[in-house]
Length: 99
Image 1 (cartoon, rainbow, N blue to C red):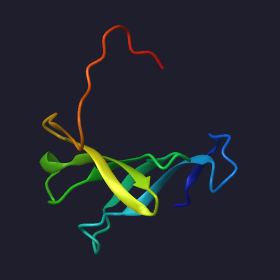
Image 2: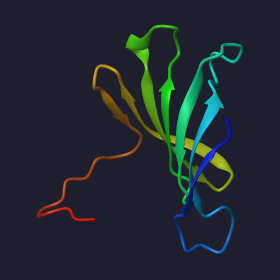
Image 3: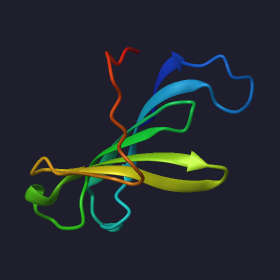
Image 4: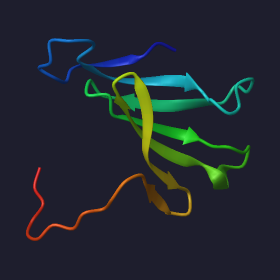
């Protein structure tokens, strides 16, 4: 199945600036038919769904990744029990967080 191109998602002039949804081979279960669903943005933030280290759905995880230069970094992992692991620090801010 080809990537689903969501169209222009950035005003950057370098690299791919479209948002995409795609299937990617599971990095742990490389010979399995199981694929990961990846949502990617032009700013190199990716959300990878259905990735797990086992064949059991109870261990499914959602990986939040980004690129730092040419290095791909995992910045957070959410498991099927609702546990969120974050690389780095969590900051609390006073007032309303807005987008």
